[in-house]
Structures are given as structure tokens and as C-alpha cells.
Image (cartoon, rainbow, N blue to C red; front, side):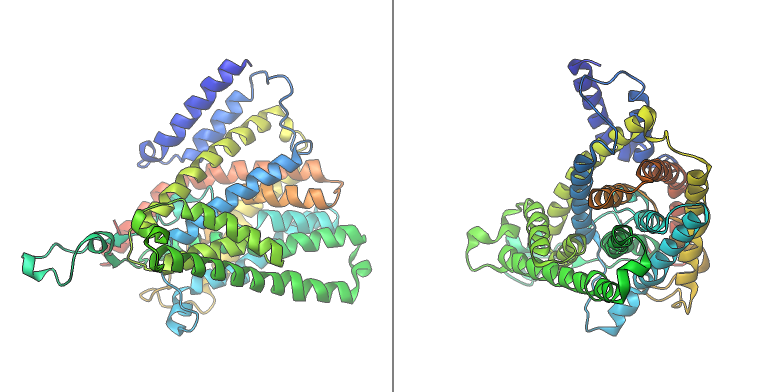
Length: 460
């Protein structure tokens, strides 16, 4: 494959990434499906000299690219959610109840069930736990078809006469409107879950590394388990949330309310603040010992909470979304190429069983149990009917987060089953993209029609 052909393929792929979301909007085909298949076709061609796609060999590069892609996606998710959260409000906690249920029940159940299945199929306990932790998080990158579209505000109605404008007018009136709350609880639940569980799976990945490094649970000891629970499971999450909120609050104060006009980026409409915020937040969180993924999502939510009816949120989200689309293009093409270049070479019946069980049984069952247990009435914010619950439980898209966690853990400890796990994770992502990508459009449209018949208007 010559360098000129690479430029041609890259240009065509970028064009497809730009047009596919709108072209495929009415069809039961996702952009991720097309790009992944395109990558698999490209992978049938000879590779340029020195180009390697073996994830074991290029593990550091895989880790960094997937890490940054997830960070960009998490900032976009944080900025996209319209449903506000006030930690002192019981109503806000109740409105977010699907999220808490999916995080506190569905994710641990998924990790445990995949780990037990892997262990039963012959994996070492540490490898089984790692596989469960890597495959448990839903993906904020590849799940755009079932997530909220972005921050929305309603432009205020034009005044009937010049004397009825109700204020001074000017630029501020052009930038502000009425904030729109989330009305689609399925999309909200899947979006908020994906925003948080990428970070909350980290403690279980570190637990797998700890277990493998120690050589067994007995070698870890009660002291090691206590330290893991207090710091890895609880402490780092709290630190991560606080770091994200602090950075987001500080940047929001500067961008929206600084006494110096040159620093009020919201008035200038400079969207690069979102990228500066995610990089800064991740750096701060890592320096103080928190989970950076949690921090970036918390920062995005905090920025979104500031001046909620300002159109600047749309500008920030759009620049993040475009960068995310470009990074996703690169990863999907490379993953597709790797699939036809040998990454699936270690796949056996055990990997197929685990992937099918996760996508079709384990995640849907764990999601159903978590959402139906003392469920909130469907007519209240955060309430889901039976069909909405089934859709939310089923659409747990697996993707780039799984690649990151496996590459991270493999860099911390040499797992004997690493190549087999790469094959299993890659096949699971392929299966998830195909199954969920095919069903997402018809199912979400069916639910939207149900909501409209019930008198709940979907946001434009």
C-alpha cells in the first residue's frame, strides 16, 4: 500500500465520517458499522512498510489514543446533558435514579457475571476479573445513536413591539433562551451512564491488576483489600468528582462572569474552552490522584450548569463532537484493519460465548433488574415504563473504553491470556456495533412515537 493510496483512503474515510451521520439517519445502519467494515476491507490490502496493527506490540499507542478519545467523548457527554443536577435536591436525585441504578447495580452485576463466566470457562481469576471490568462500561463514543443529541436551548420569542422587549436587548438577548430539560429518559439514562461508568470501572481494573501481581487473593491480604476499597473504589472517585467540579466552576466563572471582557469567552463564542477544560481537568485530577475520566465528565456537567440557557454551550459541544468524530474514525478504521490482520486470531468458542452472553443476556438482564427494582413511576422524571426499561437495559454499547482498559492493564502487568483477551474484546465490540447499530434507529423511533402518543413532545 503506497503513501498516495493511504492519503486517498484517509480522505474518503473522513468524507464518510462527515456525511454518514446524516445520510444514515433514517436507516438501520450506524456510521460505526460502515467505518468498521471499511477498515476490515482496507485491512485486506498490503500494509505499508513498518506499519503494525498488533495491539500487543503497539499497546502504548493504543492506550494513549483511546484514552484521549474517551476524554473528548466524556466532555461532550457532560456538555450534552440538559437535565440539571443539584446535589442538595431530592427531586434531582430522583430524576437521575436510572443513572444511579445502572451504575450501582447493573455495572457490578455485569462485571461479576462476565468474570464468573470467564472463570468457569478456564480463565485465571485475575484475567476473568479484568475481562469483566474491561467489558462492563458502556461506551460514550460509539453510542451516539442512543444518546442525547446535545445541549438545547429555546430561542426566546421575539417581542411584539419595540417597547415590549423587557430589557436592554443586545448581544445578551441573542445568546440566551429558555433551558430545555431532558424529556427522553431512555436517551438520558444511557448518556449519563456512559458518562460515569467509564471512570467507575477503573477500580475493578486495578483490582484485577492487584490480584494478578500478588498471585492470588490470599496474597493480597485484608490490608490490601481495605486499601483498595478505601482509596481505589471510594477515594479516587471522590477526588475525581471534586477536581472536575472545581475546574469546571472556575472556568465557568471566568468564561461567563469575568470582570474583564477579554476573558469572557462566552461572549466571544470561543469554543476551544471545552478542549482546554478537558485537558486541564484531566491533568489536575491525575496530579491529585483522582480518576481523570470521572473528573472530565464532572467538569463538563459543571460547565453545562453555568448559565444553562446560553448558546455558548452549543458552540463548545460542536467543537468537541467534531474532534470526537475524527478520533473515532481513526480508531474504527484501525480496529477494522486489525481484525483482518490477525487480532481475531486467538478467538475461540469461549470468546464467542462470552461476547454473545454479554450483549444478548448478561447486560440486558443486569440492566433490567437494576431498573425494575422499586422502579420510579413512568410519568415522573427518571421513570421508565417496561418497554423503555427493556431498551435501556439492552443498549449497553461496548466500544473504545474496553480497548483502553485492556491496554492499560496489560501495561501494568503481563497477563498470560492477553492475546486471547484482545481477540475476545475486539469480537465483542464488533458484535455490539453490529447488533446495537442495526436495532438502535428502529427501536428509538418506536419509543419516540410512544412518547408522542403519550403527550410528551420530544425536543427538536
